[in-house]
Amino acid sequence: MAAASGRLAGRLALVTGGGSGIGRAVCQSFAAQGSKVAVVDINEAPANETLQSLSCDQGVEHHAFGCDVSSNQSVSRLLTDVTQKFSCAPCITVNCAGITKDEFLLKMDNRMFDQVIKVNLKGTFLITQAVGRAMVESKVQNGSIINMASIVGKVGNLGQCNYAASKAGVEGLTKTSAKELAKFGIRCNAILPGFIETPMTDAVPQKVLDKFRDVIPIGRLGKPSGRRIILNDFDFSFNKNKFFNRCYNIMQGCFLLQLKTVLFFRYSRCVRIPGI
Image (tube, rainbow, N blue to C red; front, side, top):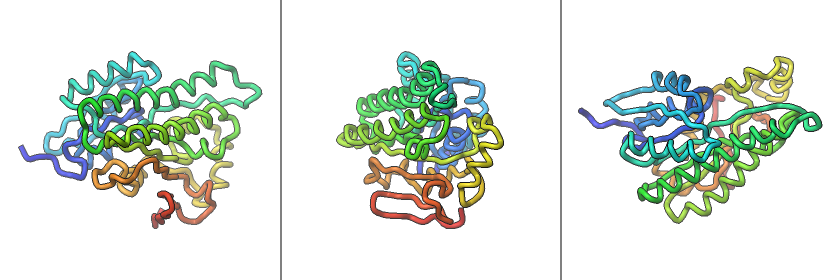
């Protein structure tokens, strides 16, 4: 049987939140690049739906796993299952798992705040820690951990003090992880999407979505199919980009920048992506 082809051929990618939205799109893009994919979601049914949509060229294996990223035991079990199933540790990990529990600050109860922090921030911490340990123990070459933050963590958003805090925390976690894991050849980067059409935004009232569109110059929410931007233009996951560490890329349809094109910042260098 011919070896898998593609820029990620032979590498194992673990994607949390892979059952829908951005996570599903990322899984599909990795598979299209020849990577083996571990699709992770708290619900195995949508994870298996994603699994069925993945390219399996040259017999590349993909598997679905259930995991509650906010549980240390569940995460430990996940890493054991993944390494046993694929006979190797992940080379690439993308933390896409996340939830929202929206309410205004003065009305939000502690439970709503804690739930979002537990999944979005603690979950990213637990996965990053477990994967980092597995990469170090297995001496993975050119490991890459990509965390899904949010533009909301930068600018805030009405009714989302919990979500904004969790995503700002993900940025801080990414910066520190990058500094600590660099000596092991592991890079940690974050992506800050703006308003993307996913199951999470399906629950947002139409009048609220309309207000978001009014302040986005391109006049629409982003689509998960923009995964090509995440993987091909950001290039965080590819071996050649060994110097991308602690970078933050902003995907928000100009919501923050108020420009007619989308700009992506890599330290002092600004890359214009035409046609978006």
